[in-house]
Image 1 (spheres, rainbow, N blue to C red):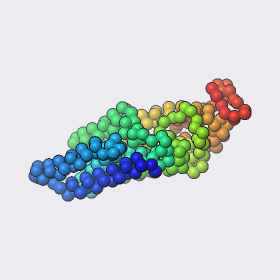
Image 2: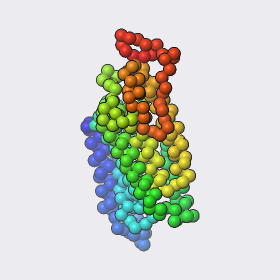
Image 3: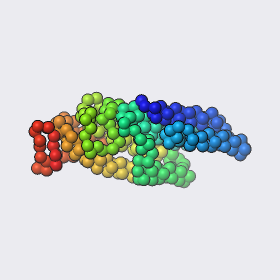
Image 4: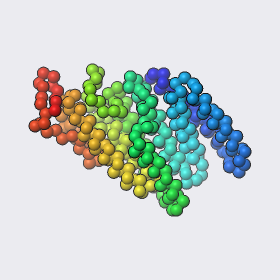
Length: 289
């Protein structure tokens, strides 16, 4: 793992511990008692703007702060316990994405590898889920304590995240956050391990993780929206990516499609090859539109 990845891990863990040390078991009865640790924490966070690799440290510290708050909510005896599980899963998702790229594809590592600024739609969806949770908690508090749904959501989040990380570990440097339009010299077609069960386990894991977040929060409106938006996004993404994979690997990828028909995302078939639209180059065994 390159140095930036180690910096991200250290910063994230440091701020998880800092939140727990400062705020654990405190009450809001006295404003001063609560304000003092807030000031201390604010000053500590301001330091991240002036240290080496400041951009990495700031983001990792923010993620660590969210993780620390999540642990406090989980340990508390309130309806926000499952919101804490959601925040913990969200924080782990973003820090682990960066760490995975730092470990297996250091040449592709950037601040975008945190996926915090994945897209405006992603950020809007996250905020919308928080708003729905708080509104429904206020209007229908009983909704947020349907324990069986909370635990089903936890299972989906955990399973989806594990599936995605397993895909990244299996693919190693062949896994990227962006669709590649040019084949790298060391890019190989990965068909073993989890890829022998479905063609896009990374996307499948993200899909089920995103659905699980809303089941955990028992957000019926956002659940429907997340299912549709995630399905549509991955349907388009897999279609476009498989065009490039056929271009890169030719018959090898077409054989792989036949051998492993499942993409991993429900009802997403991927790109259906149409011979009349392609020309083959037998010497390179590649295909071209």
